Image (cartoon, rainbow, N blue to C red; front, top):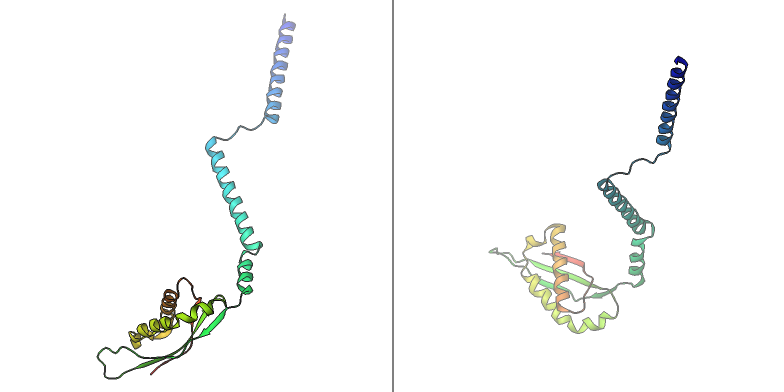
Length: 178
C-alpha cells in the first residue's frame, strides 16, 4: 500500500506540475487585458490632437503657405497717385503763435484701374484732408506714434470718401510743422 500511496502522491505531484506549466504557458501567450474605455478615449483624443497639429504644421510651414500670398501680392504692382500739397494752420489752444502744417501725400492703390475711378472723387478726398488736418494740434503730431495715427486716420477718411473702392495706404512724402 505504501507503494500505491507513493504512486498516487507522484501522480498528484505530476498533475500539479503539469497544471502549473499549463498556467505559465497560458500567461506567456495570453493577450494583456484591455484598458478601460476612459483610457481609450483619452488616447484617441491625444492621437487626433497630435495628428491634426502635425498635419496643420506641415501644410503651413513646409508647403509654403506664406509664399503663395507673397507670390499673389507680387503679381500686381502697386499704383501710386500724387495729391496736391496740403498747407493748413493747426489748431492753437489759446496761444498767440500760429503753426502751420505742410504735407505732401501719395495714395497707394492696389490696382491701376482704380486711378480712373478715384480721380473724379479727389475734391471730396482733399476736403476730408483739410477739415481733419485743421483740427489737429501740434502735440498730435509728436513722435512716430502721432504720425502713425495720422496716417491711419487719413487712410480711413480716404476709404470713406472713395467707397466702394478702397486704397491700400496713405504715404507721406514730406511733413513740415512750422
